[in-house]
Length: 183
Image (cartoon, rainbow, N blue to C red; front, side, top):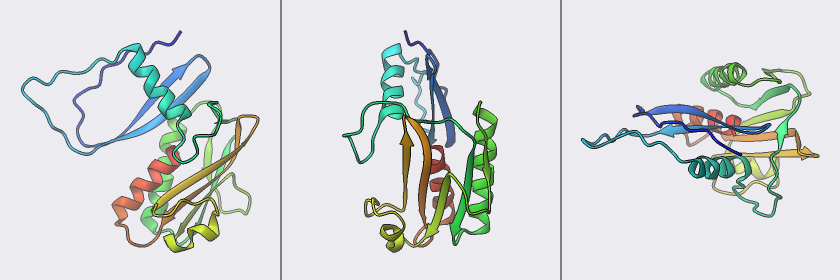
């Protein structure tokens, strides 16, 4: 069975990581609280097992653009090397380092590292959105941040992340780095 009771606290605006496990499967998702709207009658919500299972299914099995994919959890089995390409800012690289450090603190069994060598499992391209189709032919237009993964026998083997280098504030870029890498 699946059971993970937890209480959603009265959170301040910011980015939080939620971890959910079911048997040997594990998923982590990042949530962003945009604004805090307390009311006089606000009480923490304790999700039911059904709520948690629904949320886990959405995160673990959800497909943003391709619903034809089998509902199977795909996961990394080996260490992950990440390479930044294009025109990342110093703040982009700082955010990337911070996110990798945070993920390494909560992930067990594998580690992530940023590399400059030519071989990497994840490439993060910082480029104008107009170049995204050339970098990743499956890119779905009008996305300032986009990612795709590839797998063999449910093991993720490779990923590409696209972050627009124009038309975004640094806060938006940093959010996309965190969001896409965590996904």
